[in-house]
Length: 418
Image 1 (cartoon, rainbow, N blue to C red):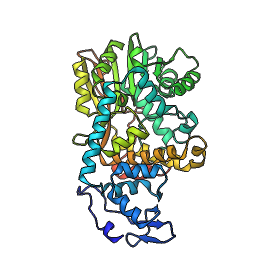
Image 2 (image 1 turned 180 degrees about the vertical axis):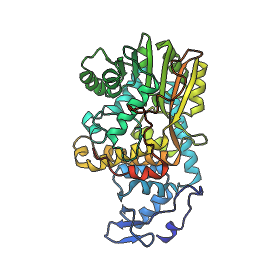
Image 3 (image 1 turned 90 degrees about the horizontal axis):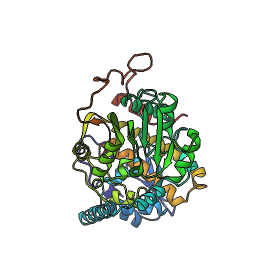
Image 4 (image 1 turned 90 degrees about the vertical axis):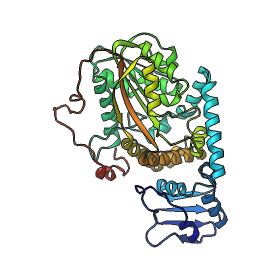
């Protein structure tokens, strides 16, 4: 036990020291890493298993967690952070990096439309009721926007919808398209609050059925691939969908967006990006197998390059990384609080995979291993109605909102109060 506690540590000065943690063995005995109250407890069958857990790679550890071979009581995110300080052998890290790269290339090279629909269904068609357990009442499944300290998840998601509509300068009567519209929250907001003539598309059958009923007409919500959309739109948003496109298909994606966008229109691309210098690894393989088959994160400069090569001009880039760390943490807390209800909807391995994925995602965003960007674009040289950000960062009364600072983020970590 002691030799594990004295093992390697993250060298970056910005990372916190190891927390106090506990181990509970199957025979009922316990051990603690140091004096003080533990942040979490590893529940393992034996001391030999504990040694294996710290020596193995994160993929194998994640699979063991999904299978129920061990458990974590308490702060799962802190446990994942600790495990990351013991990443396994260099050979296994190289092996999983190679496997993850190979899988990503194969999936994105040979991804037919029906295969993409199957991959989307794997993730999004679990059950609308399952997503209700941890999302806000609008079922907004993307990074929230915490404009002020103490915001609930519901308030932050509404702020995000308005943030997008304001960035797009959405006006009454404009044709608006939401690519990958999910359960229709942004489409509904664009119609009800901004008077837009809004349309959404999704490949998920469950999302389509819900969103079409929510909006009050199937004509506004289409169950189809974005590549099958036609027409011209004044404003387009793609929120949390680009991660399913990948680097090889990014040019095709942006060419289609350019085809759909009116000459003087605006396009907002909201997507997770892999940080420069962070490569595919064992964790990527785990996510590809259990959570997002076919998903691929690319880097910000690769996104911008592909967009510019298709005739887009970048007008604004905003990094929402701290917001997504808070969002994932709230989702994970809500899912844990609704464990029994979740297990009536999905199997225990699925529930456990989602728990470890949400906790790991919160940690990745907190540490900057992943980021998320909103990139606002127009066709190159198109005129703009607004040339400053003044209207974007003002509330209805015309006053700046209270901004969340780094020191206030801890106020937003408790479970959502809605």
